[in-house]
Image (cartoon, rainbow, N blue to C red; front, side, top):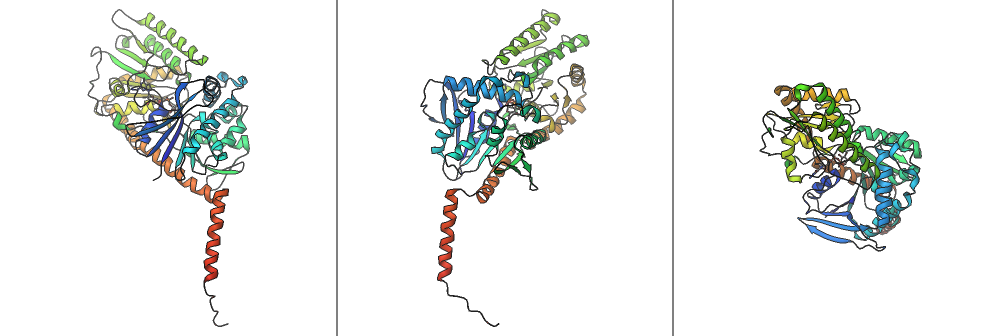
Length: 485
Ligand code: GDG
């Protein structure tokens, strides 16, 4: 039976109720439908040069995990992945730390992952690698003789080529990408940026078949918008009103990350209260912002900025019995998410740039179709390519955000129902099952194409034996007599 091997930087603990992060959520959902296992880092940092892998099973899921050393954690995870690749792919060159020399350990950790993973791979396994921490993994696995189909899915956006070319190691990254059979991205915007980047970094060419020729290989690339499992979000019995029937909730749920546009959201909310005094005391912004990557400097900065902004807005507009921003720097348990989404009249997801933004889809899926809330969504979230019936805004433009919030709060029921119907259709159709089935099918096809095109030493030997066998058979047959002529 074909096993699906999922590989990502971080493997979550299935027992933990609330581990925030879109990548873990979709891998978890996909593995529920396939046999196989999930390989990656266990979240532990241990000073050992020969790390041991741990195999664990829970609820039908198997994980194989290993720790990172303190140097790995610093240079591979916090350093190259999150202080170089994450900011550049989100078009924040100003935050990228190119000079720190993190790259060699980034490659070394990929080598280490490959060395621990390769012995576990069986000939019929399909390998699916997730996200920017692991670009070099396929190349390292190929060096160890792994011939299985290997696909890569990038959960984050691809920045414009001009930003990507600023990465000193951009050619090595392009070379690493070309070792995959299939590279998937979230949106058409990302696809265009990726092709542009490969053309400019390694003179890749787009073939008439739609595939990409880069260096000495050919790869498939495609757009696979990630979705959610709507079953996780339906069935809430929550009735909208919270503290009192007069107060409407606006909800934001975003990891505390500078790409999520939280200061811009808080400032726009302050401006809204300033310009719309009639809405004061009638609306609360509940913003959950669970912590991530706190040891990266840019994340500590954004935390301080948000605390100061929410304090200033609450100090300025708050009353004894009304606090405008309810800012919570902790995760919510996953089983409470749908109630929280459903309790809100407005869902506010306005990242400055985002691969997809699952929160937007979860908000839509959680609504009561007979009295749905309104989604305000950034034009720069990947989800905006699909969720055209949300109120699409430019998160950099405070006037646009203020106007959208007013429109959302004042939208008549009939329009809310009509918009929600269209949004829910898209969310339901393009769900996490479709995403993983489409990627899986494309990967199997792409893997077959590679084997036919570039036979490895092992395949060449098998083909030679087959040829020899059929030749022997042919030789044994009596010669056909030619008649006539
Ligand atoms: C990356 C890309 C892409 C959030 N807070 C809590 C919580 N969450 C869950 C949400 C959602 C997930 O985490 C967040 O997913 P997003 O897609 O919104 O964002 P990222 O974490 O940045 O994810 C992104 C995604 O990968 C998938 O490809 O869409 O663009 O950046 O599921 O519900 N879950 C719980 N408590 C929280 O406080 N339990």
